[in-house]
Length: 119
Image (cartoon, rainbow, N blue to C red; front, side):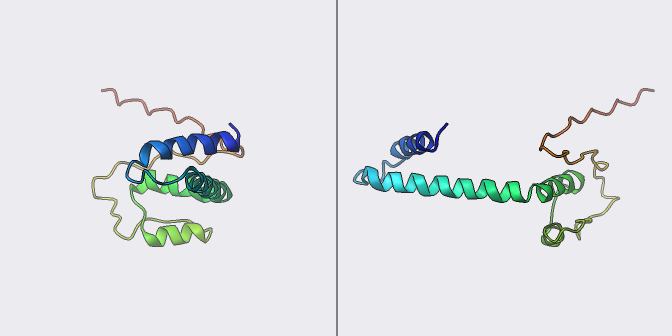
């Protein structure tokens, strides 16, 4: 899909949602759609630039089910997040995940389910 097609599709979505402002002209909607697309593109660039940190956050969320500000700061500094300040291993939480960040290329490897205990 080209940028113009994306802008046109976004304008059509804005048209459908902008019933509260019927006098808003098409040029201002086009500007809004372009600004939205630029913001979306910037967000994508940020995520791609920090993809390694995103995967570390994902692994920490799977393991601890929460992230606190200190963990996020450590991750963004390139350090291991460690456990959140409120973490307790005896709190009945599930065991840590087997999640592994994907190799280069961004493809997430599948995680096979653990076999059920058989008695």
